[in-house]
Amino acid sequence: MRQRRNTWPSGLAAVVVMVVGAGMTVGLAYETTLHHASRPPSEKYALASVCRTDLYPALTVSGQVESSTRTVIECELENITIGVLGERLWAGGSSVLLSIVPEGSMVHRGDILAVLDSSEYEELLRQQKITVERSRADHRQAELDYEIALLAVSEFREGSMTEAIKDFERSVALAESDLARIDDRLEWVRRMKKKGYVAAAQVASEEFNRAQALFNLGEERAAYRLFTKWTAPRALKILQNDILAAEATLKYQTSRLNRNLERLAKLEKQVELCTIRAPHDGFVIYANDERREIRIEEGMYVRQKQDLMYLPDLDQMEVVAALHESIMPEIAKGMRARVVVEGMPNRRLEGHVTDIAVLPTFNWWSDVRYFDGKVKLDNPPRGILPGMTAHVEIALNRRDHVLAVPAEAVSTEDGREICYVAHEDSLERREVKLGEGTQDFLEISEGLHEGEQVVLKPVLSEVEQDTNEETPLVSEATFTEEIADATAPGPGPARQVTALH
Image (cartoon, rainbow, N blue to C red; front, side, top):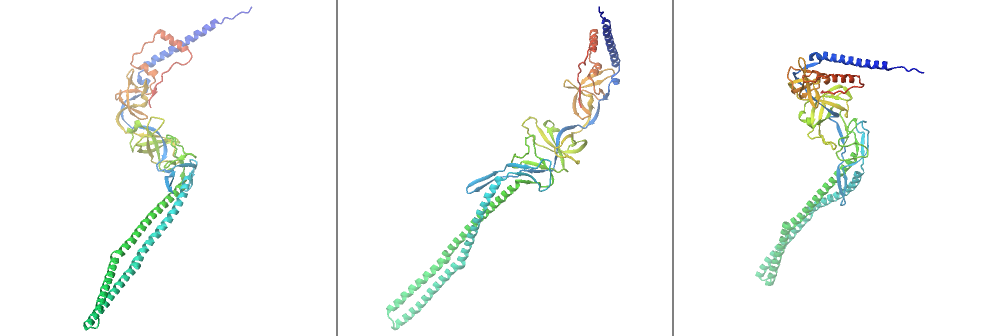
């Protein structure tokens, strides 16, 4: 028969040892706690005095490095409309981006940066060349008409009118000569009649001839006066009016030709602008705008005046920071700032605020409004490039002689700022109100007095034992439960206290 071993005494001994050990541990911890509690706060905690000092508060925001004097490469195409034989042809100032150099490429002056579709402008250019040739023909005809009108006036003044005046003068002179001759014969006939050599009928005939010659002389003189006073000036005015009309037509055709030539030159320039070249040396940065969902890429439609890329000046750098609308009243031009670029974490760059946007940047996806603020770097280092992420620390207005404590002395509990004030033998838990602050110190607007001592980096489980608030006594049952909890596996719950920095 097999004998079974009795293992109960050894198991009971193990339980007794565990209980006794746990009790000794709890007792030792309790004794240590009592000894620790008996010490004054000045020996148990790191303390700091509440004192008055000058604070230099700062505001930290994120931004992006840019060049303040960058060259903007944009779409320079324009909306152009021309008329061809009563039909309107136009190009809308937009085109398709056929090709573009890769972002970050180093380019030299004259290098091709991008190529836009120029087919619409080339068709307008072809039609405009035809219009220019037609306009040149009309202009040449107007020049000939004007020259003919000038010649007609010269011909009339120096030719036709002069000859006509001479003819009239000859006719008048001939009529006067005839009249003089007839007067001499009439006088002779009258003398002969008195002597009886001629009959009275002959005298009457000569008197009739004289009257007719006198009438002819009057008609010649009247015709001469009519020509010189009315006919010649009228004809000259007509010819001079033809000159004015031809001159006006010539001016119109000249203006029309010049206008068509200007349109031709403009269209040639538009076709040329479809090939974008670098104005100087540099490297290419696309004009992407994530907030407006604009991304430069081949195949996209680009419009007039749309930014395509930038060629920055690396000697003139700045940081464009996004300023929340709530802090706008605290920011002003000229404020000093420190900048840390993520690509250069060990360097702190100096700068100052140069510009603040008047209107916020619109974002379709958020109701939060941000204003673009520009911080110019005083001495930009080598290696800093546009597009790098940076953190800007803007120095706000100085706070003189304010009550302040180290930032480590303030904790947040249930949404309230709390400080623990040290007395001779206890701590006082006190709610405070904060003003401005720096990375190391916080301004106290209410809740503390100058000269008081506050606990640095307070641990809630420790400082609550020394506060002057009423704490319930630990009963024997509770002590037994603590012993049981001490023997249970796993950590107990802990309350988290977050310190303000």
